[in-house]
Length: 396
Image 1: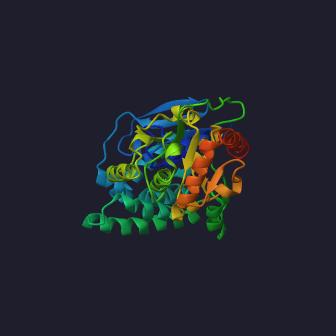
Image 2 (image 1 turned 135 degrees about the vertical axis):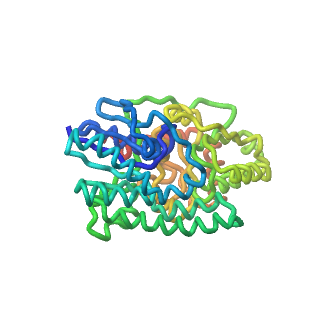
Image 3 (image 1 turned 90 degrees about the vertical axis):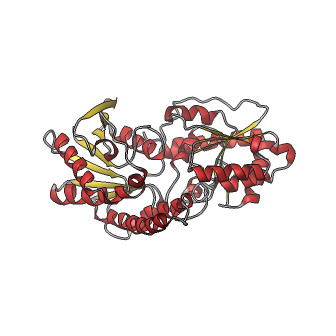
């Protein structure tokens, strides 16, 4: 059987996050025809000894016996220039797989500048292998939105951000030199279709199928709203959503409980808590710790409404939120902004509640409508699940 080897710089140790969820769906869909090996520079660039964990019959994750803690400066910036570590990592992969089977396809799944260049040179140019790249967003947009985490007063940060933006632009353009690209949104497909690159459009994926049952929403004293992910304004628009909650009539606001399953930069979390206090929502918002990926479906099913209020910018328009597929698959109604491909698959008041990005008043109206019309939005949630089964199930 041929082998598909994933080359990545993501941290898969926690087995959490959108990147890992999407990759796992890829692997499960392909393991019927390939032996799929997920590797990561995060684990093995400094060590030759690795252990192999079997996930499914033909799906494996390779990781190092030991962990070497990297400094924050390395994780944020210096890793972009870690050419030595990238070379060690790729040579380790070459030693592990090439002597065993020459029929190998590589999938580059990452954004690190050094690893992108070394992968192209080592595997595609020198080894003459087929190397594909996965693009779930433009790295330029990611870097622009990350600026909210840092204080521009820092001389070091003010230098790093422009450099990182230039590197992200190069990484986005280097995709044209791979054997092909898998893109998550139609806008990314248009972006990369302008040249002769072989582009495959694979939208957001979920593990849920019609064979997996789910329960109906019970009647509750409170109206629970769920959100998973990092507390962020530029990407997730969660600050605007809090403002919308603050606009609700007192009798509606009283029963709202917003459950946030995620974390965020310390300064952003403090700013977020300050905003909840300003809008009189301290008792309405609960920030939970990160939860295991396997527990997410259960937590989602416990909510009355799920929210994905992203703003419109370079990252959100070219990306396509993976967690939207998980939200829809839960059967819980979803309030989502009209960014990226959301409007391609979803219709307002039919299979989701759609709002214009950043429209606080419209969000408030939609939330109030959801609270006051439980039977209608329950039906909307069921229709949303049908969309997940029809378009986003990885087994299709």
